[in-house]
Image 1: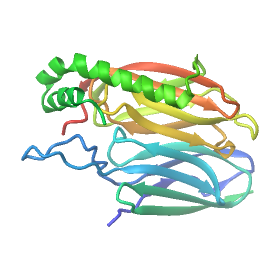
Image 2: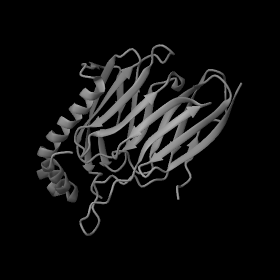
Image 3: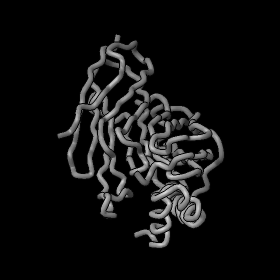
Amino acid sequence: MAEKPRLKLPKEAKKGEMIEIKTLLPHIMESGQRKDKDGKTIPRKIINKFACEFNGKPVFTANLEPAIAANPYMQFHAKVEESGTFKFTWTDDDGTVTTAEENITVS
Amino acid sequence: MRPLSRRDALALGASGAALTLIGWGESASAAAKEAAEQIAKFTGGKTAEQGKVSIELPEIAENGNTVPLSVSVDAPMTADNYVSEILVVADGNPNPGVATFQFSPLAGKAEASTRIRLATTQNIIAIAKTSKGEFFTNQKLVKVTIGGCGG
């Protein structure tokens, strides 16, 4: 059901380096403002939360509103001091959670 | 619950460009009020200091369905003094809330970019909160050619 998220971050970094992380999850982000052709409001269905953790510690979280465009895109940074795993989580209004992981080697 | 009058005005606004022009005055002021309420809730009634926050947005957004937005705060990101949150509101959207970004010192930089929807020409306001409880704010006007809420 949930589509595959897209991630862009380096596989390797130097200790203390600031890396840029880009993520995108294909999702309609139905705002709850639109109407179907019978004039009925299409119910809201959005990703309301995005979170990024590194080795289990929070890095960046975003609480999202319907004003976020379809296919929610997030770009942010992380300062890496050790090798480890980034974990990304997207939470849908209907409770569906999509996750993705990416490892980074820090030397 | 939001007042019906505003919702009606926005429903009209969403249904056509011409109607948007008529409905704009009312909806914009109601949304601006709600935006101000959200900001007051975020700051706990404190006044945010102007500056330190930069908002990057196109001056004119041709398509309100997807407008690139980048917010950043010129402040340290150390373990005991960092930008913990940034609230972004749009004072002319049906719901003024856009996003709240939360950072930990691991983020290294208080900066986030995303893509947003804008119903009409309006102000984007960003308020940053530091771990010490200080608030900084800035705003930017963006002109929208085609609104991005109707469909």
